[in-house]
Length: 148
Image (cartoon, rainbow, N blue to C red; front, side, top):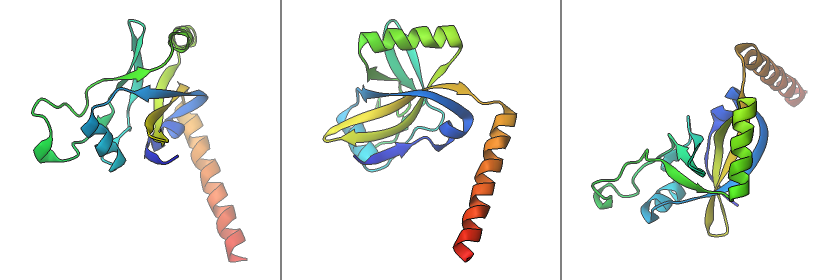
């Protein structure tokens, strides 16, 4: 399993409640671009419309600019492959608790690309400060242990 893209800000900006694995409907040149590392999940999230889930705001750049179709949109919404039960359960949780679905990482399992999606709640500013303090204290502890 190789991770191609990650959304590093997602774990900082959101409190992760549960994670799910979903497939993606992609073009062939998008798969090549992702495997080449030409993409970004920063700011991407999942919308559920009409019983289907879509990845929004994810950018997958062209693999070869000269061979890219003229009407290609790198930020188009991409359909996620989830079961109907999963989609309906996620939709209920989002509506009831005011949660959101955030894209965490894009990786492969054998020959298939999978997207890790997290059910998350947005952090307040104070929670973010607390996270920064914990991270800084861990770094200083590691630095002290390394020097001794």
